[in-house]
Length: 142
Image 1 (spheres, rainbow, N blue to C red):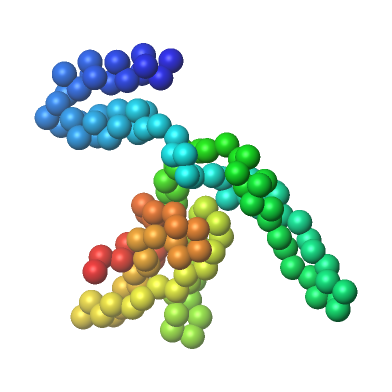
Image 2 (tube, rainbow, N blue to C red):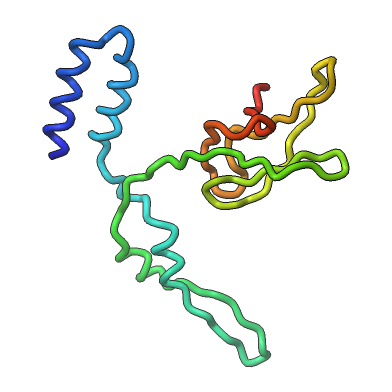
């Protein structure tokens, strides 16, 4: 099925090379990407953690390296999200990531008519690329 999709995209590119050529090339490249042997799922690793309790009452989580070696490799998939406006408080503008609910503070930029608030292009918590959001959740442009 993947090979058929790639073939169809190549045919489509022959008709729309000018306007959509680069987008079609990126889609083909993503489909042709092979799993990375050094990439494993973070969730799969965390499922392998074990709580170790010491005699003095302290505890920590441990992961057996042999368990990690047995995990299957995965193809990294880029995350994409948007900032969700959470309003203002004491001169700060706040938003949350649509992927992980992590908070970020907007950075004020004087426009001459007041301040616009800009947010990072990537979530500092999960790494998702921010592709949009509400009117007050604009992209950091500098």
